[in-house]
Image 1 (cartoon, helix red, strand yellow):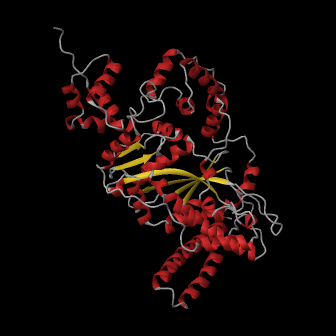
Image 2 (tube, rainbow, N blue to C red):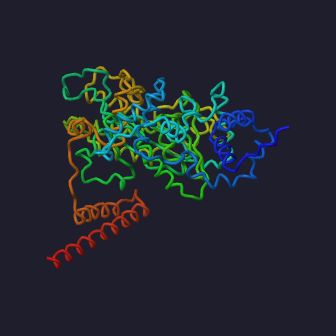
Image 3 (cartoon, rainbow, N blue to C red):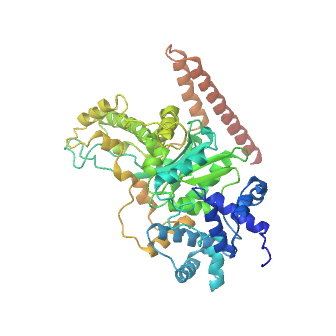
Length: 522
């Protein structure tokens, strides 16, 4: 009988690392097969059970921060671009061979400025094998699903429910993106001659939302436009407003932006709380997580593929409710502009739209709506069945007022205005691997070949005035005086204004001190 072959600490750690990444949890037989494929050694079921038990939990803590990646390699930036491109090809149903990856690596080398003037490496077969190992290309499921795909989405969701059951409801998060036609009017096409300037405007931005199941923790909205700095956002601090602005020529989430988002999410959660983050397996999500794996206290799980409309909590009514709240403000703005004889599409700019976006997300979407939608998704316990989201009270009447005031004779149904299907559809284009590579390179470099001024026409022409602290203080005094004279307002409103007054006064003092210092230096 041959001597019994043992299992090393590194092999045991690799087995735990692989098993913990799978959704649903793999069977012992699947673990045995995976280990055999990796190490040409067939384990016993008892060894698998022992390796996955809490006896060896310390191995996770030792290696988890880098558990999704091996050594970075000699050209990490190039490999990030190549891996991102490879994921996009797979999600389009394509296949990448080793020779194709080597060819694309050489093309990428020529475009990255940090390698300018350096001879192009050979990108040998040895490098290729190490690249595959670093990015787990030999063990990944083709469409980015974490682990083997069950027979049905229901099976996969049941496995995810089991994982979610290990967390408190306030520690279960969902992240998702949506598109927004931020100045679309209720017309299906041509309008009457009353307002010839109004047209079917489809200026589009993407919004990235993340919230926990109880609605007690809403992360800042990430807003993705087409211009780096739209004219309307100059002199504006989006972070102070409570959002984030990013850009690319398609106004879609990409790997570079997703990496930034993940880093902010990790910092937001910290190192103490144990949380679960769920999302769909968009290629940008997958490649970003490979590049920026979570710390040991954050677990990320994919929702069932092609079933997010059924299982994504944000898609169960939260985003629909947000859009209704946003478009209520837009309708009110349209009505006021028309009554003042102005073209609402010329009067609005992206700064105003962002203000409405953040107000709708932070104030108008209720915790009850968020919690009920998590329950409807079945991600949290006590699932419920909710009716189709109804149109908020008063919105239909406001919609009809705008139709009449604008003399819009070919108005669309209000449901189509509130949730246009095209908002979440990419422009129909023929997929081209070479174009995809160019797009990935531009995304990673943060450059675009598109004229920024053209994009500013989409995102507004007005520029935010640069107010002084003195002007802001004087304007606030008017608001305070008004508040003190209104019985319908209360002390809490006044105290908030007074706190703001103190903050602005502090800025005034700093400005005066800086002016004095500059004068002394001169």
